Image 1 (cartoon, rainbow, N blue to C red):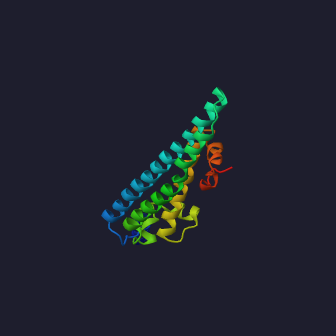
Image 2: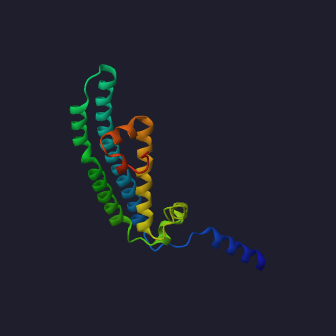
Image 3: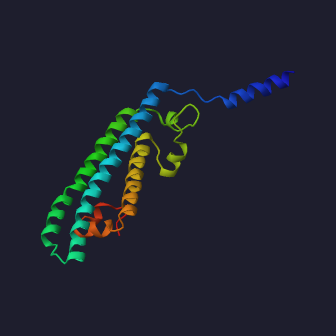
Length: 176
């Protein structure tokens, strides 16, 4: 009987998550803010990247199909595109800082567990992150690359468009 009791207690101890230092309200706020900020950054990236590449495609197609000189159009596209990388970088910084404000003080031990935490244990390992700041930085970097890849799949001419206006290097995830 005593052996069963000890085994039962051991099983309960293994199944019970370690108690978190951070309250569930703070963890849930972190998760909500993080998801919102990543979506906001991805939306800004998409709209700025697409507006640039579409303008260049417009110029090039008019040249290719209608034999119209693209010089003025490409100059206009270059002006439009030249500020996009800075807007995207500013959006990343702003959104990352807002996520850090909500999550940055949460101990890593409360972010990583699946039970009683937010479940970022695999992401931390995959990113090589050692703290919450490293984790969030990695998440925003991955969101950037994922978003760029989607845009470049939807617009096969995007890399050529960015190169045509000298912006190819500003998009390292998909640059040729």
